[in-house]
Length: 146
Image 1 (cartoon, rainbow, N blue to C red):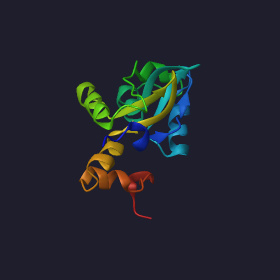
Image 2: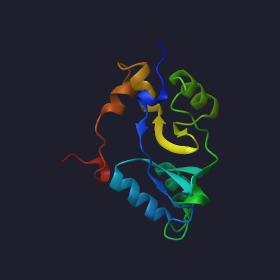
Image 3: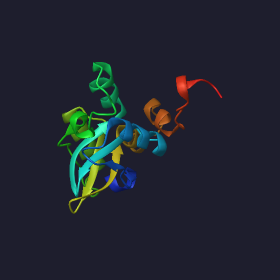
Image 4: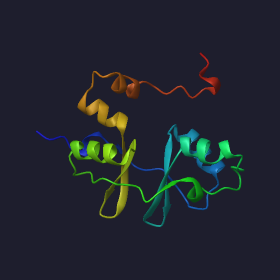
């Protein structure tokens, strides 16, 4: 029996405007305890912005995160998946496009995200990646013990 994306995705999306600063996007990621946001203009998905994008495409180059926009740093035109697609199709898309997250789009609207971790939990719940994905994140500065 096939497992569908809707069964494993994280419902709902967090998004920023294309002109939002990287600081705004990073603060939203911190507040929501997530590592990515969609960059959207109206109903259109312009791109996916990850914490890694901010670090490597802006901060590492010395760009000012207060003045650089989310659109300037995001991965544009992301590959998307439907909630009615089989999980195996999502795995193949991630493999073919070398991405770790896919926006889930239904009727032209983003309705969720599916990550490599979500798929690992679904497909191989005993794997190390699945165990790591189920663990609570450690977002304290330096990852220091409490």
